[in-house]
Image (cartoon, rainbow, N blue to C red; front, side, top):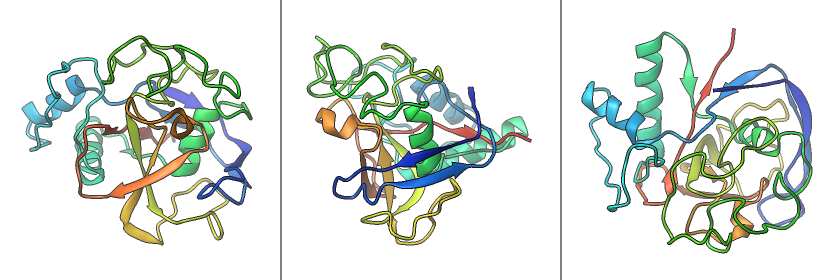
Length: 224
């Protein structure tokens, strides 16, 4: 995991669902997964009885590829198992924590600049030279915080309920727990997403109990 320092940033943009851009203060450091949770990690949870769902990999391979076909509820079960196993508090990141970690101090649409370019991430028009499928975690450069695949590969569940805009959103980095809570927020875009969905500020939603082949997650560990 990577320890992300406390700080202040501007969350959102002028685009639909991403406005208004607003100041958020992350009040204390937190640790976030350097990579998305992999099939290898999920399969350990299954072997140890913490997870009952065995997601399909679509024949792409397991091991170091990010786990897919997991719902928001599945991600919560995994976090609870890992917390019990380790004695630490693991959870889904808030949407604000996720964007803060993805931006890593940058203000551009992607941490590497305003244009998606080539072979910077795994998305539909990211020019990877690979078939449209997940790739092993860490296949591209990490951002300035040393976090990988915040853009593309799999869309990542976060804790927050869905709201169509940021009016009334928390300004302290905590999760927004009111709104359309059967819908939960996904961040970062995926291998089958257009690059616009892989921007640091991009957001979308999915039913909290539905599994899909482009959706996965990473976790936060709370620090003392």
